[in-house]
Length: 305
Length: 274
Image (cartoon, rainbow over all chains, first blue to last red; front, side, top):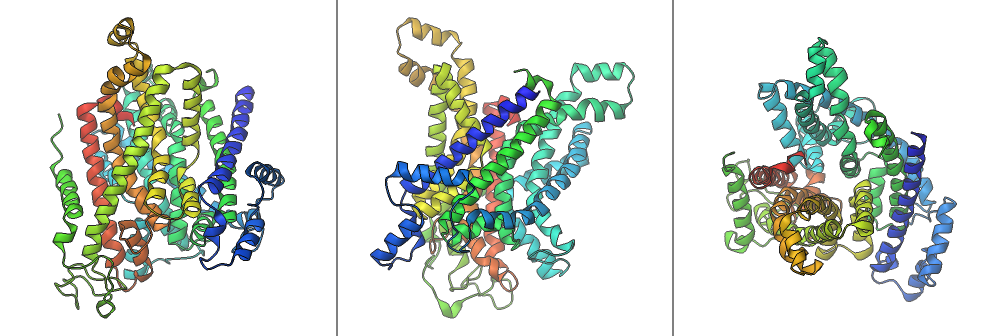
């Protein structure tokens, strides 16, 4: 197990390096970021100055080594809009994102696991068909629109819930639903289909023949196996979660990392966006590592391949 | 066998019809502003008129007209992104699976890396460095798509290359390139078509999300995602601006997803788990 963790950790570091390299070259080969940052009528001196501030002068490979050297020391450049080190801006926003994303994931799992199991156990029942419909709809609804729809219904029309910014408990309800719907839909469908397969397997039959209670069969023998596809398709969910966080925080004016990403795009704050992406990469790969370890723990077959 | 999903086909047909005949269907322009007619509600609401069936936006542009032209943008982006992203994925999948060895493990590592990191972030970066536009959008969405195609196609090819007809072609002296093009490719086209259909919804949502985040087609060209974004600030007074394009996106994505499910069950049921 320890060897496996070390191996995954090294792979993670390697991936962060790849992402950083891609971000670096994508920014410089597809155009000159200085032109995107400056207004169109900027003078040539302004342009030269901006090119120097952004570290875009000199040959590309020298730029690359300076950039990497600085990045390794935690210096990811200055945000143009905030006039602060980009990494600092990122860390000042991170806690706000952490208040909402983990909570949403827990709520999503708490809802999806029982619904998925119930749908599989009572195939074709009203519960199954209802949750199936919710899942299909939840996957098709883009979450930026879902957020606006919820604001229209619960804030504008009914006046029950706040529509923006951080605050007490009620401020969490709409963003959580917006971000969590696709997770619940995806988890539920995966758990249902893997449960159906497992319920039909030999070891479940054996567990039943042994006379184990139905409760033990389902919750102990089946669930652990049913969760495996959720973990192995984690990357897909992670992608959706990052997109979802950017969109949800934008819609609800939630001052987290997602909203910061949006601001960096809108204000063409190239150094900030670059820093946000690299920091996101580190964060995501760290989370993926934890998931992989959990995966190896749940499914011993992974450890030995 | 499941019945043909008629409702889905009607919705898809309606969208294509709207996109193709947009200029004939409406007397209004999608971009010209008529400020005297701004923020008119849909015809069934008080103050609305049949001149603007679904109302007008803050610049007095007809919402329905912008929906028609927005359907065009969605379909063009979808077609281009699926051709580029799906095509690259198909090519990498075939080569990776057939050639095997080091190349295969390298390409599959790349696919793993693509799955481990959300492509949306690269898409946003591209929009900032290359500038907004159709080219940027298509490249960005292709980055999102290729890995999924490559992985599934490679899996198919691994099974195909052990079959007798491939061995026979080798005995006949066919070059690897020829085997891949004439013997492997036609046999993965079913799977490819199913993947294309299942990903249409993904692309439409991706295009709308990027446009919503200010990284899609630049205004004033109408796109459904952009329309939702533009109407967001007016949600208290003019609900139709955001909600109507959103309903359209959801319905179309739903229709394509259900149609894709049907096609998969018909052509390639073993893809069920995806």
